[in-house]
Image (cartoon, rainbow, N blue to C red; front, side, top):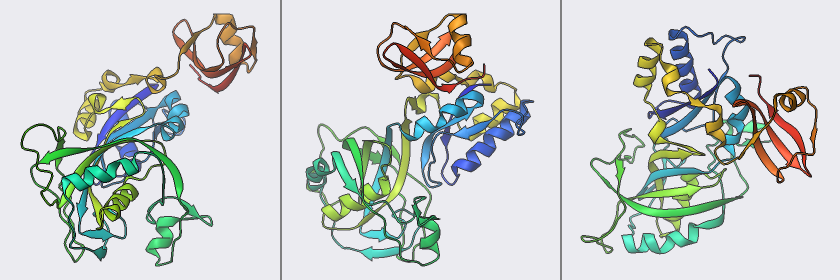
Length: 330
């Protein structure tokens, strides 16, 4: 059990709770998940009010889980105009209101300003630390939280059209956890760029460290109004997409059927952007001992080293020398 399970995380569930659900399924399959058993970890948090792709690393894949934090992500998200909340999503209380509503044309006109390298201030309700304390803990305690802006990259940002019911936030701060399902992009006949919008759904391909809630806030402000996120769905995290994701119900079903291996993606799946480096058994043995391989005919860069198709290590090649970055006990 070394590899990746990709969950389609439901709304209301935290990432730690998702890991616990995988552990329960593993136990049902007869696997040991004690401290001496199979290690389980997630490849980057996803807010409880968000849904979508959550990579769960098993066994030796946990050594690569940190790489997911550095990977690009793709999100569908809905910005509802007219109210800003302290959390910048459905969970918080309203702190600002506006009667201004933008048109589709105006939304599309400002999106280029938020595409490419940008600066953004993270939400005060975030896990970032301020003087050793989590920002959300300070905010919940009523303390003033000031976070520095950070550089992120928005690779693409486009409008999509959603159908069906839309979640709303009352003036009193009550919330609905229903969320619309994103559907194809605005295109072709029937496009009304002059209609005033209560909300808009966007798709964003972003770099590590990007806060979608901050992006939504800043887009609304640029449109002369305020807004907050009322739907957030991650459709891609690094190489992982919804295509391979399973629901919690399916996870439990596979656990009971002792068939989790059927949905387990290999260790290599988390490193699809890194070329493979084939080693002889003797070379693999030297790497496992922490030795440096000399005279290897490979360009400088990162590689996924294997021997007879067995993962050996994530390595770095420089000047024909191979050094271990992360070794696998397989």
